Structures are given as structure tokens and as C-alpha cells.
Amino acid sequence: MAEMNFGGVVENVVTSKEFSLEKAREVLKNETIAVIGYGIQGPGQSCNLRDNGFNVIVGQRQGKTFEKAKADGWVPGKTLFSIEEAVEKGTIICMLLSDAGQIDQWPKIKKYLTPGKTLYYSHGFAINWQDRTGVVPPKDIDVIMVAPKGSGTSLRTMFQEGRGLNCSYAVYQDASGKAKEKTLAMGIGIGSGYLFETTFQREATSDLTGERGSLMGAIEGLLEAQYNVLRRHGHTPSEAFNETVEELTQSLMPLFGAKGMDWMYANCSTTAQRGALDWAPRFREAITPVMEWLYLSVKTGEEAQISIDSNSKPDYREKLNAELKAMHDMEMWRAGETVRKLRPENENN
Image (spheres, rainbow, N blue to C red):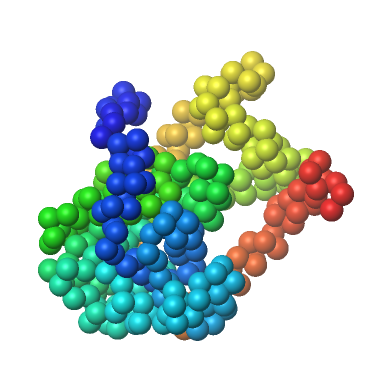
């Protein structure tokens, strides 16, 4: 393992230098990797594994997603099967269905988890809150996780560009004595940049906190609040959007992402620096109680239960789409459509 310094704390990580692709192929040479679900993570992980030379099959229900798998080169009856067929044939079962889908399909899947098989996850939700999900694996199988820190689309795109997406990994149950080795091999196989160790509990808790916090929920709320204040005080939609979203995503975030917040500050005016340094503590103090509230809601399982209750309903997808459409129809995001069309790369479109 390599040692990396994260903000003054040294952690052990694994990269392809310590655990090569050739070693990963050797570890998994007798395994049939069954990727169950072809939604968010399924396409990226299965295609990367296939391109890296592993024995992969896909299990997916009939419908549009099944047709998408066919379009990606998976062949019905050879490498593309029903969920139950794939679980029966596979030795490493990759549970990449949605969290609600995993709960729904668990009774059908569990009976094929015979001794010696491996149950693989990319999210700790089902296992960490098993008192709510009912997902309790047999004791005679390995239960492991590799969780990409990004979407399956990003995982695939970066793989095709010759780059790796950072991932966390964990072993929940080691029946074979080789679970960690298989976990790392899977991580390298799906295209990880570096792998850092976690637990199912920590991954599930931090993931739900991040999604509801700075990655999605909090950032949406922050942007909408600033846009609405500017509009209420007479600023035009184009001005409010450009000062709230466009400059952030197109100018500042690339600087922040490349070299950090201090680098972004260094490339802004001294007026911007002074204002940011003055106001950052105020936002931090205002937001910290909300983040503590969010973390407690996640840790206690309340957020998991809300997700289970909502996404287990037959019409959950239609309701989610209706809420997303309502967000899309808000003035700020409609203004954003116009602004995006004016970007240089879109001028001829």
C-alpha cells in the first residue's frame, strides 16, 4: 500500500502500482462477475471490467434498460440474462440495482447465494441499515464493497480517457479468507484511480450526508437562495444567474478543482478575496447546525427510511420526475438554459 497525506493525516491507499491489473486478473481468473442492474453504476462498471479482460455477465429485467445493455454489446443468452439467471451463474454478484430495487429483489437473489460466492456492493445502504432493508447475507459468503466517488458515467468516461476515478473499499464479511484481495482486484478492474479503506457504515453515512449536503441538496438550496435575493432586489434573470451559477461552474470551480480553494482565491480580485474571507465564517456558522441535524438524521436511519418508504412505491419514478420537472421549470434553471446556449462551444448549435 502507498501512504498519502490528506490534510496532515497519513492514510494508506491502494493504486494500480501496488495492485496491478495483471494481479487483479490473476485473482479473479476463475470468477464469473455478474453485474445486477444496468442503471447508474452498472454500465460503467460492467463495460470497464469487460474491457479490462474479466469474465462479466449482466443481469437485468426486460425493458428499456435491457435494450440499453444490448446496445452496449451484451448478448442475450450469452452475456445478458434475467436477474435470477445471472445471480445463479455468477460467483461474484454485483448488486448495482437501486437501493429500493435491491430490497425488492433480495428474496429472489438470496436463494442463489450459495457457499463460496461473493456479494459485492458499491454503496453500503442495504447492509448498513439491514434492520430496515431486510438484506441479511448468508454467513458463508464474502460481502465486499467498492464505491466509486462519482457516477457510473464519470467512471466510464474517465476510464476511456485513461484516467481512474477514486473509490472507497470495504470488507463486511470474509468467509473465504480472501475477501480483501478480491475487493482490491474488483476495484482495479472497474477502473479505480486510488482506493481508500472504509467500512459499510462509514461509506453509507458519509454518502447520504454528502448527497443531501454539499454535493446536491445544499448547493441547490444555496444557489436558489442567492438567485432569489438578487431577483427580489431588481436584478435581471441573466445577471442573477451569471453571478450565481455561471461564474461558479465555468470559471471558479475549475480553478478550485484543479488546485484548491486557495488557488481559486489567488486568481480573483483582492475585493473578492476580502469579501469571501469575511463571509465564509458567517456561512460556516449558519450552516453547521443544519449539517449536524442532517448527519444525525442520516446516522439514525431516518433518511434511509424516508428513501425506502418513498422509493418503494409503484409510482415513485413518476413522482420523482414530477418534482424534477418542477425544479427545471423554476425561473433560475430556465434562465440557465438560455445562458448555456450562449457559451462559445454552443454558438453554432
